[in-house]
Length: 135
Image (cartoon, rainbow, N blue to C red; front, side, top):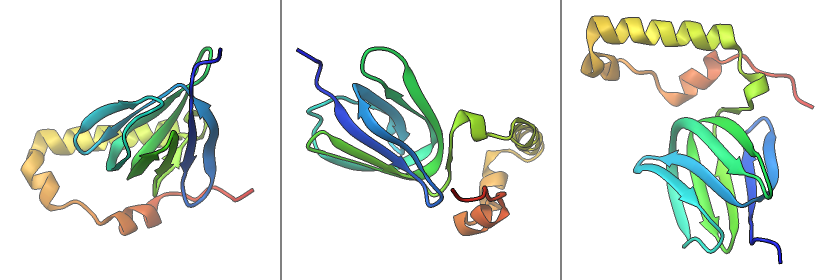
């Protein structure tokens, strides 16, 4: 008999990044990292900025980078809605590296509280991101 699975959907406004079965899904919510298995109690949670890992039936995983959003689980169905999400092949490594270096330099110079006070709203952040052409 096959192992039970979750039906998983990972979506952003631009694309469906994954739709299919998963034996387990691991993501970071505002309360910390959580793993979902078939039969999980219904849950609606806010996502942090992190990697979502869909553990595929059999072997392997399907990773996706999400930048906030929501996760909803009920009756072995799971949907992850993210304002900004990308597959590993879509990440601009040079842009991500430059952003990390800027963040590390700012953190070293100003500290966390000063940086938090000058964060930008999500809609402004989304407008600054380069858009990928649609299908």
